[in-house]
Image 1 (cartoon, rainbow, N blue to C red):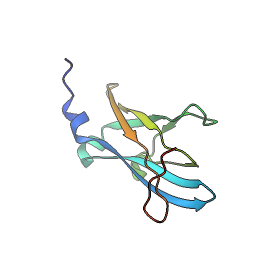
Image 2 (cartoon, rainbow, N blue to C red):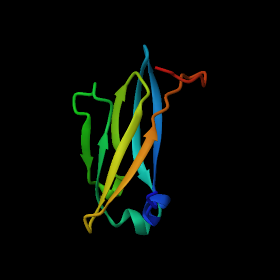
Image 3 (cartoon, rainbow, N blue to C red):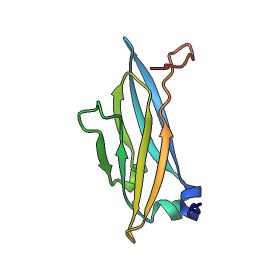
Image 4 (cartoon, rainbow, N blue to C red):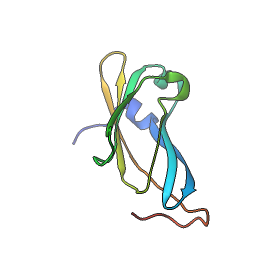
Length: 108
């Protein structure tokens, strides 16, 4: 069994979302963790659902924690590779969650 790196344990993907109406949400994901670990990251490559026009997107803005902002109608797992300045890679996964204003979850 592979051991998780110390950096992997310290990083996580966070999200926010906003219902736009008509079964559509705007949402963002970014990487959270200690400043010292985030400072080691060169860029984050996100892999979204294959139905996106650009399902693989690279973000290198450390200032906004490598934030990716987009929109859509369904939930799916988001995979990310945080590529560190030394060339090593930290693999992350996040299950996108979308909610209606009532608080009910979108399950599609």
